[in-house]
Image (tube, rainbow, N blue to C red):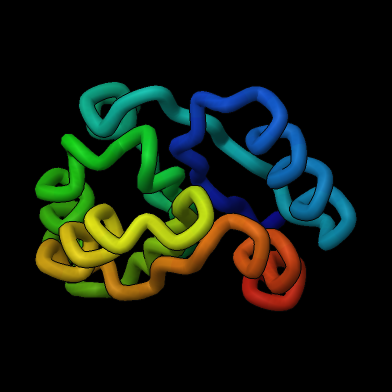
Length: 113
């Protein structure tokens, strides 16, 4: 079964991701921090979903994950409305797949299937 890893603390948004993934037959693993993720001794999923508003301070760690995995991990970020400061900062760290939350959720099923 295909899996995605999610970094999202917001219960409503997390539930929405789980619901969309379940409709596609995809399981979801939720993590609270990159430290927790790295100590689990697991094989990372090829897709990581990141709530950029909640994890802005950890962008460098996510960039490192991409480099370690030789860019085999696709990190998809969403941000509240159009928060240009966070979008710019994410792009500085190589997190270029970032969208406003509404359009992200509209196209999520298509992106993860």
